[in-house]
Amino acid sequence: MRKTMIVIISASAVLYAFALYSLLFQRMANVSTVDVNGVVTQVNLWDNVNLVPFKTINSYIQSYQNGLSRGVAINNLLGNLLLLFPAGFYIPFFLRKTKKLWKFSLVIAIIIIGVEVTQMLTHTGSLDIDDFILNCAGAVIGYGVFSLPMFRGMFALRRKAS
Image 1 (cartoon, helix red, strand yellow):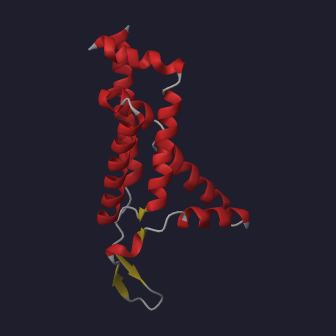
Image 2: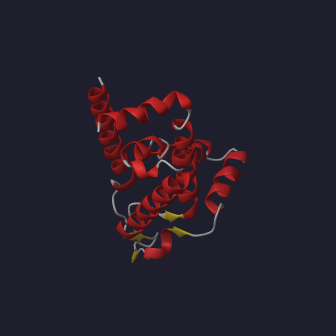
Image 3: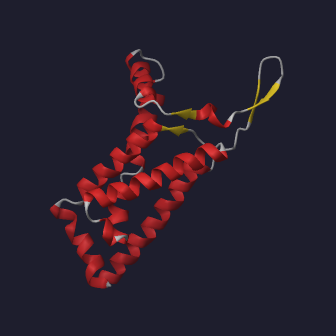
């Protein structure tokens, strides 16, 4: 039974990893733009960079409060918050050394920074500090939820099976 559960958890982790990859990197690279006069200009690598904390989050909140693009605001804010929620389970499950919150937080921060920089370099997204904040918060919330006593048995599965 333990081995079966580990196989199921492993398979779900692989599916989650593929879903993340698709969501984060499967957009068409947009390396040029065309203005109203038909002039093509190259997109500067730094055009899609936001290093001002809460700038994007505030713009989505203001947009929501003003009744503009509410769906977009909710999708972006909740989407970024929930995107790495499952990582709060998978990372400590597979990387036993990340059982402590500070180690988990360090690993998830490194992963998210890598994703943000890769998105910027490949033009498949933007490098946004607010994405980093929301993704980290979601992963840490996931870590907290999966650290509750009702989920501790899952981590015990991993220890006993190996």
